[in-house]
Each structure stands twice: as structure tokens, then as C-alpha cells.
Amino acid sequence: MKKYVYLLSALLLFAGTGAALAQKKNQKDPSRGPVLTLDAGTVPSAVSARFAALHPDAGKVSWIRDHRYNYEATFSSGGHDVLVMIDEFGNMLQTETVLSMTDLPKNISPQIATGYADYETGRIVRLESGAEVTYNVVVRNAAREARELVFDLNGNFVREMQETRR
Image 1 (cartoon, rainbow, N blue to C red):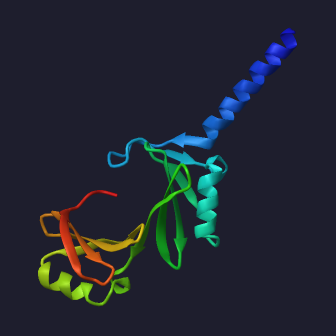
Image 2 (image 1 turned 90 degrees about the horizontal axis):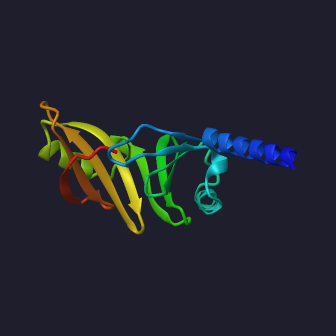
Image 3 (image 1 turned 90 degrees about the vertical axis):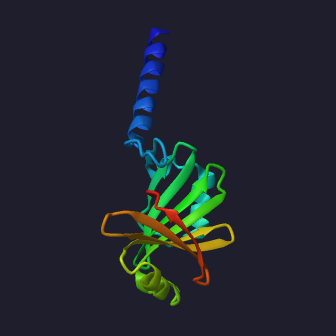
């Protein structure tokens, strides 16, 4: 009987160690709370199936889970960095694709050049959330004050926000 208790204890210890190695706790990110870096095998099947259906050709994929149990897959596609967020039930939440200025609709660049001539262009992201698609462009002035400019799918200016870290 003692052999079985020791064997069961050893198995539970081994299983706990394997789970700890598969999920590495990251630094706390103030914008997302605590996150876990995951191995592909620890991503729930509903999440991985949804991701595979959306991006069957994605190569090297990195996974994290945020404090809300949303799963984020990051990978490269067509020379762009892509982040896909899927909830724990496999529902698609949003996709962020990092772009360059030349990837924007043609009418956005002149708006930035005119309205933000004293600013440098930073990160540019195409954000898809449900049926809504926006282009978010971060600009910074010489004092390093940042603004996030939001444009709709057609390149029309929507709003300016104080830049938030992603």
C-alpha cells in the first residue's frame, strides 16, 4: 500500500513540475496585468482550433495568456508582425497587424503630415475587432509626448487619444 502512495505522490509531483515548466510566469505588464507564456500544447483546444482555422499557414507562433484568460498568439505573416487575441472559449476578439507608413491607405499620410508636422511617426497598427477595422498611428513630438491617431478603414480621421502602451 505504501508503494502505491509513494508512486501516486511521485506522479503528482512530476505532473505539477511539468505544468510549471510549460507555463512560465512573465513580468507583470501594467497594461495587461500578469501574463503567462505558454507552450503550444498548453493552449486550450477551442483556442488552438480557432487559431488554426484563421491562420493555417502561421509558422512560429508564441502564446501568452493574460489575466482575463484571453490568449494571444504572435507570429509573422507577409513581413508583418501579427497578434491575434482569442478568448478561452475560442471566440475571436481582435487582430493587430504592425504596418509601415507605406501600408496605410493613401489618404492617411497627408493628414498626418499636415496635422502633425512636428511629430515623428511611431508604431502603426491595423486593428480588426469584429466588423470594425481601424488604423492606429502613434506620433510623438520633440518633448516625447505621444498621441494615438485613429483612422477608419477608408482612411478617415476618427479620433485622437493619449497614447496607451501595448
